[in-house]
Length: 333
Image 1 (cartoon, rainbow, N blue to C red):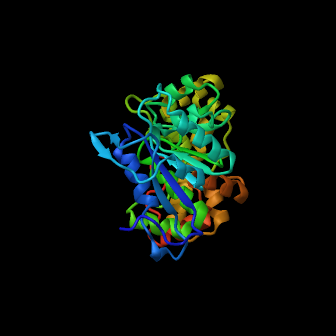
Image 2 (image 1 turned 90 degrees about the horizontal axis):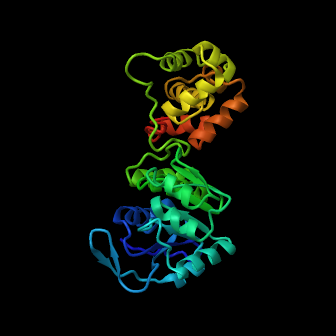
Image 3 (image 1 turned 45 degrees about the vertical axis):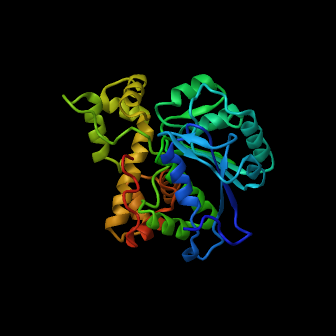
């Protein structure tokens, strides 16, 4: 399959690998950006595979790869993808860091997959920004680079010109998000279908947290969570929820964070969005009815929270589901 798109007006993507690069993350980036896709009817990306260090690269699995481009290609790229880094405590080559700083200064977008966030951090590009990486590395990233607002509760963070994804396969979610921004939902959905992927997964979904209510002997928290699910339509506040659970607000907040990684209100919003998704999939009722049933005080609030978690409006989501391509958008939400 050809690597380079023919249209010279297409955005250029530089995928940069170094020694110790994970083949899976590298392959995800290559597999999404590199193939020519004439069936899309757009000027699809031109992709260049770049070595971040001189010579042939020895990747994970003792695989030796000679990439066709060096860091000079980064200077002309519109998008740079860093699909991983071998050791968080090891400073990447200065030439690579300098190339990324130059690219950022001229307005290129830079994206990292998994441990690739450490390369951006070493370059100083994440200072003062929110970012994420694999959940096993988030604490390390936060300790090593305290100026970064590290998130361990998301699949990816889009900070405009800098985009970071969580562990491994979440890079596909991030890259489909980039495609959606560049070419629109139709093209992103076609690419996802070609790759046999769900077209959207909630960017704000935690890497690890499930919807499960704590197991074992029912606790006050478990009973409250079940009660909240049965009463999504009712107005709730931290104070009213604490009163229902017979807990102080501080204790309730702490127990929720320990059990779910979310505050009570954030958990409630996700439950409301998940229920609204079910109503959009299974009924033809108007949006104001769905908003009311799910407990949103207004259609504006419904649209804002739904888009914030699903990266699509309720109308778009319903349309996608009817096309049969909105599979499992909110698993774990």
